[in-house]
Amino acid sequence: MIDVEALGPARRQEIAADDDVVRVRQLVRAAAVESKLSLVDQTKLVTAASELARNTLVYGGGGYAEVQPVSNGRRRGIRVVFADEGPGIADLDQAFTDGYTTGGGLGLGLSGARRLMDEFELHTEVGAGTVITAVKWER
Image (tube, rainbow, N blue to C red; front, side):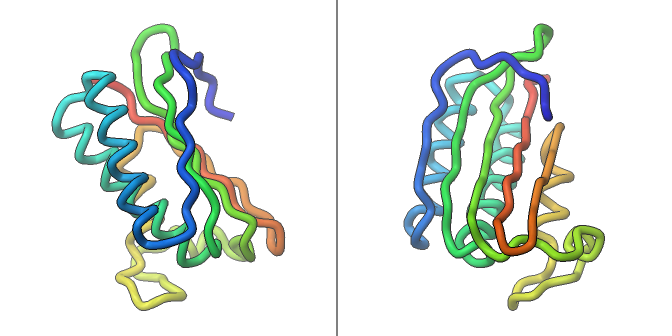
């Protein structure tokens, strides 16, 4: 579990359609601007959140995202949580392999999102769904 202190309420966005992926991206960007993340970190966070929201919709069958300002006592950041009750991920090593995909994409979404974030945790259970928690810290 990523140890953080919440600095404000979590804002939640359901993910059930393509438009919701756009709403997640907008929500994350607004939170990053409010927290004064650099433009580079805003872009990394929004890109990762967009990929994870798309995965939640396409592979998880929908779910939700939560976005929250946090602190670790030294730095401020943004925590994003993506959750679904989809089929789960049977092979995490394979899922994190660049180029592997069960869809029509490039197979870089999950691994790329992990590289863009400062902290990243994934919990999954076959048949029960997936929860991803990630944090981007200010520099």
